Length: 216
Image (cartoon, rainbow, N blue to C red):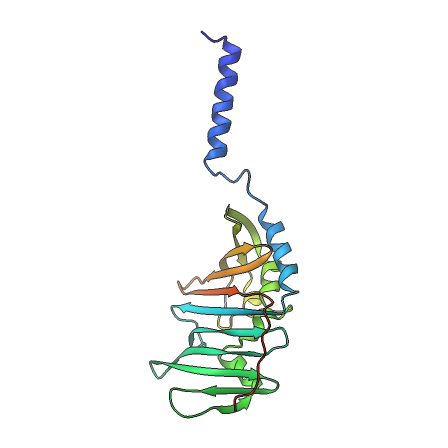
C-alpha cells in the first residue's frame, strides 16, 4: 500500500496530466503575441492570392464572392459574383493605375475611374497597412488562442467596427473574429456580424510575383 504522501502526489500528477492532455490552453501560444507578429509580417507582404465570401446580407455591398490576385502597389485582377436586381452575375475586373476595367457576362471591358471600386468592394485594401489585414490584426481585442496544430494557430478576438470597416465595407458594429495564422502570415479571417452575416477572407501565395496590365 502506498504511503499517504506518495498517494497524494500520484493523484496530483494524474490531475495535472489530465488537464494538460485535455487541450485546456496551457501550452498554446499567446493570442495577442501571435496577432502582433502576424500584423507586422503582413505589412511586408508584396502580393497575395485572395478569395472573399459573404454569407448573408452585408448592407450596401453587392459583392457575394470574389477571387483574384493583388499586389501592394494597389493593382489587382480577378473575378467577382455581384448581386444586381436580385440576380447574381459574374464580372471580371482589372484594377491598374487610375483605372478600373470590368466585364460582365456579355460584351467587352468597360473602363471607369479606379476610385469607383471602393463603392462596390476594393480588394486592394487587403494589403493596405493603414486599413487592411495588418491593422485588423493589430487592433483586435481580447485575443485568445483556441488551437494550435500542424503549424496553424487559430485565434479569436473582437475587431472594432471602425477598424474592420476599412477592410470590409458595410460592417457597422464590432465583430467577433477568428484568425488562422501560419508562419506569421494570416491565412484566413472570419468576421461574424451581430446580424448573423459572415465574411470569410482567405489568403495564399504570399509574395509571388503579380503583374497587372490593362486589358487589350
